[in-house]
Structures are given as structure tokens and as C-alpha cells.
Image (cartoon, rainbow, N blue to C red; front, side, top):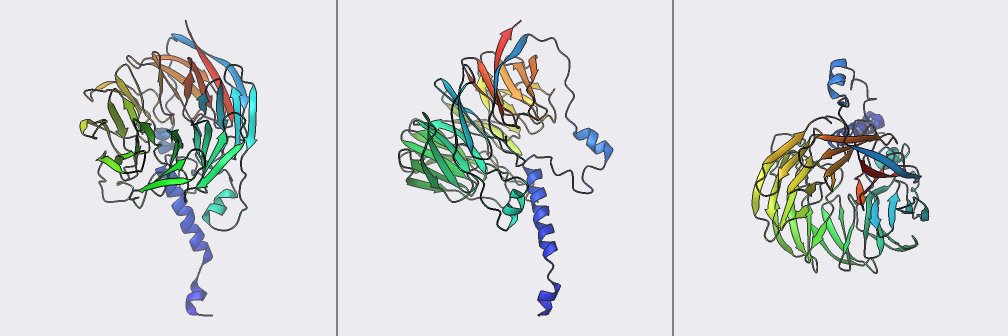
Length: 422
């Protein structure tokens, strides 16, 4: 045996892998690595990182639970955010382990359910080590369009199910993990993978039509921006800190605009991912970068209209002529769409790990990591209502249809809530 072989220590490699894992979870905003010795031992530091306590206020509306239905095993331990999707009379939800359920959105009655895949064998390597603890593999969903229910997996599969009965129509592999919700429009399905590649697939067959590749920094957040389509153009954000507009037909770039330039000495400081879905409203497109800024741009050529320093990796919302952002400190910020000026800021939810904001009617809804659903006013950000959802927190984006708010909790229950003014 050689001297090199004698000194090889397999445990050192495992330790390095665990260290990289802890770092990646930290970057993604997770906090489930506190079991590591030496982390979280300082009581003062623990107190400063605790979620802000809920404040008292005079409710102006009641949030009533209409129905609740169980959907599989929940999202597991990999910080998945699998959003439900609404179409016609039904809402489609999925868990992290391949179960997809269609529910009548008025009654909560199941219409169909299907198990489109299951966790692979354990094998070897870092991913297998993680899967022994949690074999969840659904990483992007639920997308709705072209008569399809769309999901992405950690294996790089885009899976298309028939929206009527849940049967599998096709599946196509795009190479690496699909990091966001696939989007369907105009006979095409668009999926972005974590290697910086946007792939266009034929919505009937799943055949690859074109791909667009962007550069990926050494260190990024887990997840990607979801593409959005308008007027034969697909818009998406990348980990490079850029938003790009591409022709739907062939993937030809029309324009690209940098939201934030990487700054700082360390790779952590230089993370500027645009993970939120670009928001289109009023002839403009809005984007936000992590550790960067929010920007309003011309939809036609990407020319900046305004910039505002802030940081977020969550989707934005719009209403009342404002863009709503939940920043990385869990403050909800309302920004004027035309001027970029901050109209108001609600800081009552610090460190509560909010969901992306949902804006409709006069309200903004957000969920939090302790399982509460909050309603605030679009006009001035004042607190309006609150209800306990449960399910060990709400992480997935909320959706709304006909004034009913739908929320998937982390334990796998889908809830429908109605708003009643007092």
C-alpha cells in the first residue's frame, strides 16, 4: 500500500461534504442545521434570531377556513416550496414525494390523485446520504397550462400530467434539477434548471425545441426563477443577477438587463441570484435580486426606469399601482411602480420566514414559518387579520381564486380560506 493510500481518511471527505451542506442550507435561508455542535449555543444570539412575537391589533376582517384536505407526506426537510395551482373548478397540489392531487376548489372533494414517481434507490454519494434522511424529489411545481399539470424533479425531469384525470402525458429530462415551477404557454413548456439553462419543450410531446444557457456563479441560492411569457416573449431571471428576454419561437435573446453586479470579496457576498419570477404589470417588468436591488424596467427593451436597494429571493406581487416585496429580513415593502419610491414598510414579521406576498382586492396575504396566515392592507400595510393554519409552517406560495385563498402547509394539508369583513 502506498504512503498516500495509508494517509487517506474517508471520514475527512464526509466532513467536508457535511460542511458544504451546512453552508448551502445557510445560503438558502434555512435554519435546520442548529444540531451541529457550536452552532446556536449562544443564548443572546438565539434570542436575536427568534421570530418576532405577534403583535396585538384590532381585526378588521375574519379569515375563515372553508375546507382542508390532506395531500401526501408534505414537503419534507429539504426546504421545498411546492405551490398549488388553480384551473377552472379545481386546484392541484403535490407533495415532495411524487403524489399529485386534484381537488374541487369549492368543496375540497378529491377529483383524482396520482403517484407519478417514487424516490430512487439509495446508492452512494452526497445526494444519497441526504436521501436516507429525506427522499423527497419534487423540486418544481405546480405549473398549469396547455391542459397540463407540470412538475420538475431533482433528477432533471419535467413531468406533464393530463389536467382532467392525472394520467402522465410525457416526461422529458433537461439535465439537472428543475429549480422552479415550469411554465406553459403558446404550445410550449419552459423549465429552468439549476445549471443556468432554460429549456423550451413541445407541450404535446415533451420534445426539446431549444435551450438557452447562462453562466452560473460558483455559489448560488438553491432554486431558480420561473419563466413568465407575454406577447411571444419569455422572461426569466438568472443566478448571474440578470433578467433576460428571449423569443418564444427560437430562444433568441432580445435583451438582457443586470439587476445587480456581484460585489464583495467572498463568494457568499457575491451571491446576486434573481430567483423570483419577473413581475409584469402596466407595460413594465419588475425584478429583484438577493443581496442586491429591485428594479423596474421597460418591457420592450429592458431599459431601467428605477432602482431601489433591497434583497429578496421570493416572488413579488402588485396592486394599487405598487409592487410588494418581502425582503430577506421579512419586512413587507410597498414600492411605487412608476417612481420606485417606498410607499410604506411593514416590519411586524421580522424573522418569521414569510412566504411570497399574495395581493388581491384590498389585501396582501402572507404565511409564516410558525403556521400563521396574515392579512394586511395594500393601501398602508396595517394589520387586518390573522389565522393559525398549522402544519408546522407555510412555505409555499399562496394562490387565490374568486376571493378564496389557498395555502399548502409544510405537513401536506391544503387549506381554503374565505375573507369576511367585520
